[in-house]
Amino acid sequence: MTMTIQKIHGYPVLIIGAGRGGHALLEMFIEDTLVKVLAIADTNPDAPGIKLAQDHGIPTYTNPVEAILACKDYPDCIVYNLSHDDSIAAEVSKVFGDNRVAGGPEVKLFWQMVTNLKQTKGELEESQNQLQSIIRNVMDGIITINESGEIQGFNPAAEQIFGYSQQEVLGKNVKMLMPEPDRSKHDGYISRYLSTGQGKILGVRGREVIAVRRNGEKFPMELSASEMRLGGLRYFIGIVRDITERKLVEEKLAYFAHHDYLTELPNRILFLNRLEHANLLAKRNNYKVAVLFLDLDGFKKINDTLGHDGGDQLLREVSRRLKEAIRSSDMVARVGGDEFTFVLINIGSYENAALMANKIIAALSKPFELKGQQCHVGGSIGISIYPDDAQDTETLIRQADEAMYLVKRSGKNAHKFYRDMPQK
Image (cartoon, rainbow, N blue to C red; front, side, top):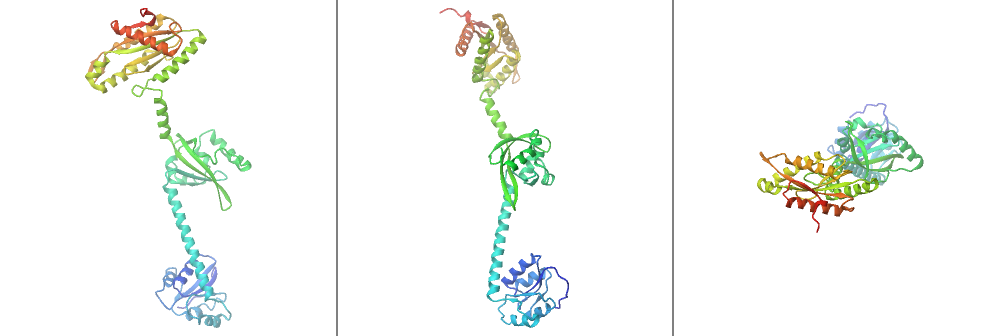
């Protein structure tokens, strides 16, 4: 093969020997812009380096001397002899007139260095690929920003969380993912940290913040932020997690810690807290509080006839009517199976308490539609008054309960005050 002389970019080299060492050397030189491989030669036309050179349009020779002669117009050419032919050095000296060949132990050492570099490079590429695979497939969002707050990295999980594609956010300020007032203050936070080294978020794991999706929806997010230096530059990495579902579960658990699961009315715990607070206000402002204890009449029969699901449906409907019957300042709670208690704030007089009790009984008197049947229940109500009957919550509830049982014994579907109880 005759080589056409042309101006080249990179230092000219010729490789003699296209076995494993020559192949590795050629592979490295191909990727290096500072080197220009003029040709490669090997007596074996099937040597791995020969095929690699042909794939990249590099001249190949089966006669090393022909390869050396083909490069004679490149006086700066360096010949790497990776063959076992000791006569190569003499042939190079004939053509170039000086010692421009690297061979023997020198090439062996060089080949080992190249092999080690390639192995290191392969391991690095493999670890980089593994890292990128982890970043792409991790469930948490990973966002990288520079010192100016510009987004440099935005993995698929972050795309799913925020609704933006990576292309839409790269190079833009991360504050686009924040609501006000954090959005307006963010640049100041970064500047202050860069100048003082003091920050509120860096190094804090699982900090709860509010973020904004592409559609403008705000949502709760867990953020863990850290600092990283790479290539002399400083970056900030945020690992983010959408905790909307978790917060909803937490809120639901907190809600039902103080509310009845079936009817969503306040439970006994919340009722006692409210009554305690109402009594304190009544004492301070010198007014009366009424405690009502309601037990449904006829509930057991409906529960036995229509089953527990029918009974549950009835309790939910009863709860709805009871909430509608009282004032917004008052409270009704479910404290047992078919038992309900009320706190009536600043009731004024016994007559007002009686009017409210009658209103509740009237609300229950209308028929209930359950499983295609019309059903009827009534209500027996006992009433105690703060501070007339008692001043502590438990005594007031017990007194209202006793008055309710007096109604049960007296014919049901009515109300009585604790003061109406016969003296023991």
